[in-house]
Length: 345
Image (cartoon, rainbow, N blue to C red; front, side, top):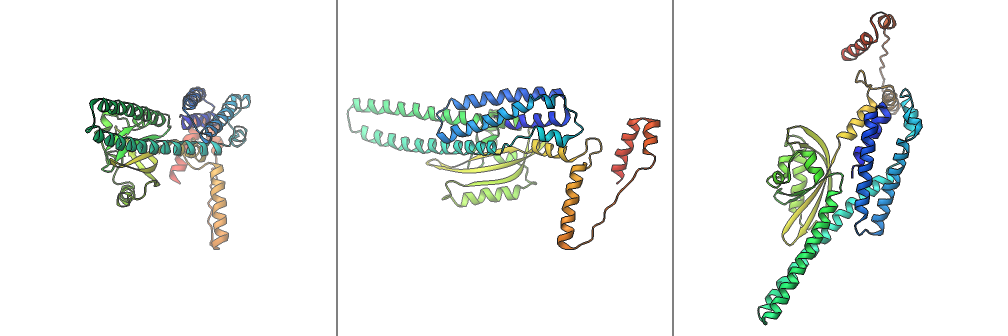
C-alpha cells in the first residue's frame, strides 16, 4: 500500500528539511490514496470498510501535517519540538492494516475451501453423467465450465488482494517450492515471476542467520498438520538477487486443502524502521548517540543502579582549545576533530 515508504520520507523531511524527501513523501501519499481507492472497489465487510476509513483518516492527518506551514519553514535545531508538531497517533492505522492482512488470509482460505468443494461436486456429477444420456453429460460440462469460471474469478480476487499488500507475500508448498509472489516481493528480492517459480524459500533465507530457528518452526508445522490456522512471527534475513541482505519480520500461515499443505509467508522489511531508529538516536556528524539517546541510556543505568545497588562510572570529556581550532582552522577542521575523538573513544 506504500504506507511504510510514506512514513520513511515524511520522517526524513521532518528531521532534515530536504525538499527531495518532501517530493517523495507527496508521491508516496498519492500512491497510498490510489491503493485505498483500489481496495475500496472490492466487496468489503463492515470491519474491512472501517479499517479502510481508519487508514484514510490517519493518512489525511499525515498529509495535513506534511503541508503544515509550521514545518515548511521550521528550523531543524529543535527536533523534539518539531516532532511534537507533526506527531500523529497511527496505532489505529497499524491495527487496521493487521485487520486487512487477516482479511487476506481469510479470503484465501475461503477460496481454497470453495475450490475443494466445487472440485468434489464436479467429480460426483461426472460419475453420475456416465450413466445418463448425452444431454446430461453436456449439462455437466456446462456446470464444470461455470465452476471453473467462478474459481477463476475467486483466484483473480485473491491475486488482487495480494498485490495491494505493502509487504512481500509468498505462497509456497510443503517442500518450500514457491508458487506465487506479489509485486512487492519481486521488487524487494530482485527476481522476476519466472525466476521465483524455479526457486524455494531456502534460496531467499541465509542458513547462518536464524536459519535453524526458522526451519525448526516450519518443521514443527509439518509434523502437526492438524494446525489448520497457525501463525508464527520471527525475524530472518532475506537475500537479494545481487547478494545484499535485509532483515525481515516474517509471519507464516498454514493452509490445508485437498491438494496438500501450503503456506503464506508475509515478510515485512525492517530496514526502514531500523534506519529511522538510527537517525533518531545517532548524531549525524559523528555517528555516536545523540543527547536525547544519551539521557535515555543514563536514566536507564541510574534505574538499574538503584535496583541492583551497583556502582556506576561516568566519564565526562571536555575539549580544551576547541573554539580556537574552529576560529583558526575553520569548522571543517573542528568537525574532523570531533569525529576523530569519537573514533578514539
